[in-house]
Image (cartoon, rainbow, N blue to C red; front, side, top):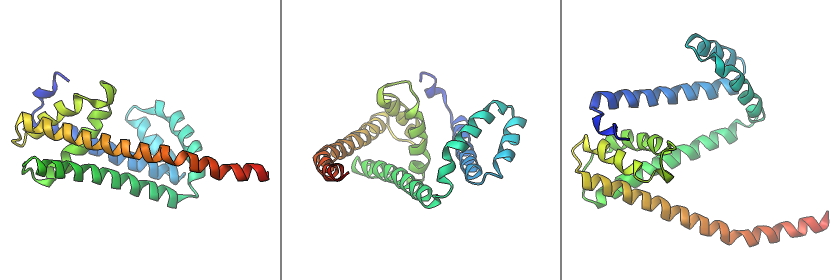
Length: 190
């Protein structure tokens, strides 16, 4: 993390393009898994670029996901939910920024929030605390946001996420007795 301040716009662009490339590769990989005829072509491509060691793992993944091939609607629904979650994360960042008086164009949020999500998911801190804020200071600093404002933006969006998660946890816990009660009659009848 100490090297993050040394990242200039050129290298940030390279990192972002690498993430977009990884996303594109992931889409092709999922497509190949759902269309088994494409999987050998993906494996040949990986072998050409030096990743032939992934072949057994891809075969294993394809076997495990095989029962989803007939449930494309379910997979499509999962993709829609995942996209909705990411859009809502961007939307929360925009709303928090506006509440802090920041006038950053939305296009930067479309670039920075997914990048921040990837950085935060790295296993280098507890729940991304500190990493999120530091990376946010660097990224939003590139577009003229002050350090304190960028830190406040990231920390506040984290607090919103924690609050929403806690609310979801309370709802989940409150429903446990109802789920147990619903299961009891079915056990008695069997």
